Length: 95
Length: 488
Image (cartoon, rainbow over all chains, first blue to last red; front, side, top):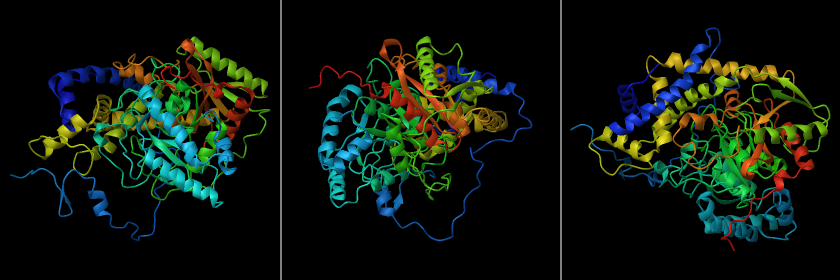
C-alpha cells in the first residue's frame, strides 16, 4: 500500500492538525516507511481469531448510581485560557 | 548516602540519624546542581519539596511512619500532581498546573514520601530515546553523548546519577525497562491493571502502566507496595487483595526454569549486549536455575501490531488537547476549527503528530478492519505465545534492548529504526504481562546492558525474588557513573 500526499492532508484534516506542503511531504516519507513495517500484519490469516482489546478480558465494572463528584468549577476554570461567567470561551463559529 | 537503598534511608530516618528535611535538601541540592548537565527534571520546587519533608518529619516524630515516609522520590511528569506544573513533556501542557493528584501520587503522599521534582520525558511518553521532549533531550549519565532511553529517561537518569533515590515511570511499550537498561538501573512494569491510571496522562490506554524505577530489585519491591492497589476511578484497575512484594525476596532459586525465547537471541543483538546477557544467565545457572529454550513465534509481529494499536489509542486520547479548556492555545486563528488546527499543530511536536496521523488513518473508514481489528487479533496471538511458553518455564529472560544506548541524534530522523529499539519490550505490553530490567554489565563505550525478565500475570513477587538473588551475588546495580567534572 502506498500513501499519497492527499492522504496525508486528508488525515491531518481529520485529526485537526494544520499541516503545510513541506511538512506534509516530509511526513509522507516517514509514514510510508512506518506503513511498510505495519504491512507485515497483512500476511497473517487471523480470520478465526477474536480481537483482544484488554489483557485480562475483563468486563466493565458498575458502581452504585450515586453522586460522587463535588462541584469544582472554580478550581478547574482557574487554569483555562479564557472563561466568562462560568463558561469556557471559544472563538465564534456561527457568523 | 547517595548509594543507600530505600530501606537503608528509611532506617536512618526512623532512627532519627537524619531528618527528611536534611535528606531532601541534600538530594535537592544535587538535583539542582546537576540538572543543567543532564536535563533530567522539568520542574524542581525546593519550597514544596521541603514542606513535604517537614510534614514527613512530623509523621516520623509521631510514630506514624511507613517504609517510604520522608524518602525523596522523583515523579515522572506524566502524573498529574496538585499544585505542580504537569507538562507531560509537551508544549501543549507547558502552562498546566494540575488541580488534582493522580492515583499514584496520592499513594506516595499517603505513604509520606517527598516529591523531589517532576522528571523529563518524551512528549506524551512517545519515544524511545527521550529526544522528543519539548524541554530538550535528557543525557545518559554514563555518557552524555548517549540517549538515556525513553520515555521515562528523565526518571532513569535521575536514579542513575543519584539525583533521587528512586523514581516513578510509565511503560507503554518499554518506557520503564528500556531507559532502565540504558542507564544501568532496575525498573519494573507491573501486570496491566495493578497500578492506577487515574490522573496519569493517557497515551495508549490498553497498554500504559505505571511502575517503579530504582537502583535495586529490593527498592522496586518497596515502591511497588506503595504504587499498586485498586482504584475505583480507573475502570481498568483490577480488584485484588493487596500484596507484600518483599515477601519472596530471599527465596533460593533452585529449580527455577528460565525460558530463553529462541526469537530473542538472534543476529539483531549486538555482540556486547549478547556477552553481558550470556554472562548473567551463567550466573543464574550458578544460583541453581536451569535454562530451557522456548519459542515466541509471533515476536516479529509485535512492533507492527504496536504501531497500529498505540497510535490508534493515542489519536483518540490526545483529541482532548484542543486549546479550549486548558493548555496551549494558538495566539491567532480565524475560527474555532482554525484554532483547533493551529493549537494542535503548534502545541504538539513532530513525533506526537506523526502518531496521531497514523492512528487517525488506521481508524478511518475503510481501514479500521484491515489495520485496527487485524492488530487486535494478532495481539491475541502474541499473548497466546506467552501462555504457551509459560507452560515450559517459570520466567522468561532475554536482552532488554538489542544494543547499548545509542548516540543523541543517531536515530532521530528514522522513526522505523527508533521503533525497533523497543522490539523486545513491546510484546509484554501487548500481552499485559509484567516485565522488568536489571543491570547486568557494560558494553561498548562503557554503556550499561540490561537483562529483561518477563513473568506470568501477577508474578511480580517472584520476578523481584529472581532479580534480588542475582543482585545479592553481583554488584552491577551498585555501580555509579563518574561525576561530571564541573560539579563541586
